[in-house]
Image (cartoon, rainbow, N blue to C red):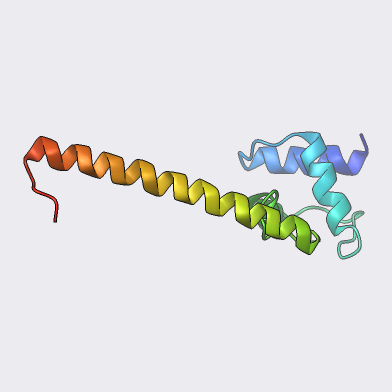
Length: 103
C-alpha cells in the first residue's frame, strides 16, 4: 500500500467515510491521469470519491464497455420486475385485509 493510498483513506475516515484501502487505491488509479497525487486531499476529493463509489458496479460506471453496460441494465430491469411483482402481491394482501374490492 502506498503512502498516497493510506493518506487518502485516512482523510476519508476523518470525514466518517467507511472505506477500505483497496477501494481507495482503485479510485486513485482511475483518477491518476486527472489529479496530482502528490498534493493534499480536500473536500472535492471526498465528493469525487463518493460519486465514484455511487456509480461503481452500475451501468453508469465510467469506463465500462457497452456489453457490460447492457448486461447491468438487463439485470436492473429484472430486479425491478421482481420488485413490481412483490409490491403488487403486497398491495393485494393489504386490499384483502381492508376489504377493498379490486377493479
